[in-house]
Image (cartoon, rainbow, N blue to C red; front, side, top):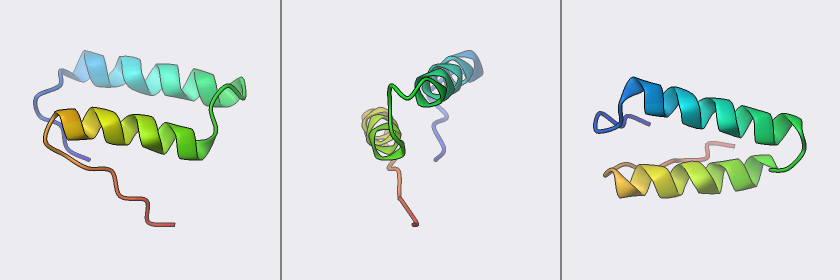
Length: 51
């Protein structure tokens, strides 16, 4: 997923938050993919689950 419109600090913040939510079992992998897809679509991208 390439999102050039997002600043690197924003991407790092999203990554940190999603990692925390996964480690605390507040989000499952499919929920994380859904969140990333929403963010990506807002910036002209798309998340593809290759599993």
